[in-house]
Image (cartoon, rainbow, N blue to C red; front, side, top):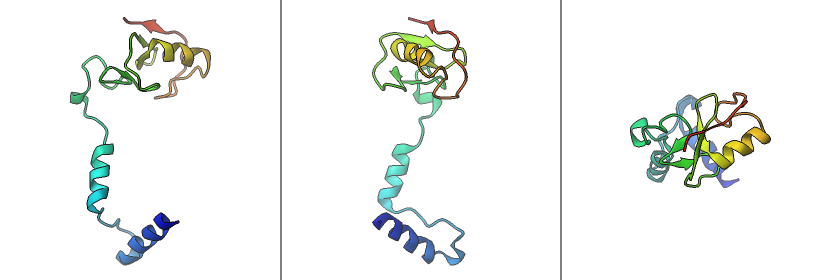
Amino acid sequence: MALLEQTDRQWSAVPGGAAQPEPEEEDSATLEALEPADDAELEPEAAGRGMVAGCCCVCMARAKGAAFIPCGHTFCRACARELVAGRGRCPLCNAAIVDVLDIF
């Protein structure tokens, strides 16, 4: 409730309520921490494919074995197998998963 009241105060302080208020210092630090990583920060083979720094984006664990799915995204083998058996769709782009290719 306090967050709602704070938001209302910030919006009412802005003329017309159309522009967003400037973030506070602590909010700026939080936003910087939450910004997505640049492709340069990713491992070359994982850039834009679902694995950041060798970690599976589903289980967030360090992948011991990697697997490609047809849409090109990469997950650890265990998560890729679970996705095929359970959901049947890529959690990143919602493409159908028909097969899993083990990489290493």
